[in-house]
Length: 287
Image (cartoon, rainbow, N blue to C red; front, side, top):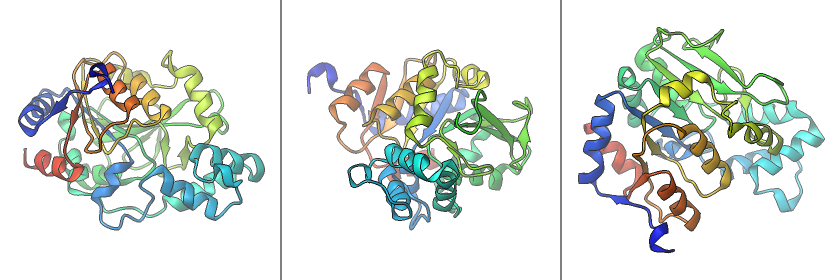
């Protein structure tokens, strides 16, 4: 790793106050990854791509060489068992509703100060926390849609009751953006190779990203929680969702970053918070 590739690293003294200030100024966008499930003891749903693909291939025959590759395994199942099989297996994998962690609940409690939150995994934990804290009327969500099922339509809005909404409701205090879909309320999933190819073909010109998300992210600071950037998909989505935001962001990343992760952090002006997610959660909830 070169000096150029070494990401900026923050201590508690250098990240907590700027994050708190961004929150108080309504300029913080939490971006949650599958690692958030690590805060929930014995979470009943898969918390990594590896755990998810293991569940899929346990119920569908997939060639050995792609058994550990989520998008390729999902594509094989889609090709040979039909798209409905993929959706059924994903619905089974995420059917259980995890009890929200303290951090999920804290984020929901901050809702008036968080006009936008990004949920980057398929579980319903954050939306369950929103429903518990806010009830059904003060927030909504927008999910990415697979073109194989919704050709020409990139996203769908839902209110806090899980009902399909025509568009963003200005009365919502917070919008939860789920770019790769989610289990509830309609089993929308971007998971196979073809799902991602369709989106990545257009994402550079922002077509799959709702106009409301583009407006709400402008000038904001992103805080990545439970995310890794060690594959091109995660980097591509984060890069495009962050576009035209601010030049100061943070990521809780206790593991030493890979070379490509380090380059991405530097390129996107993301300061690495070198502590565990559990430690960061405790500090945030106390702040």
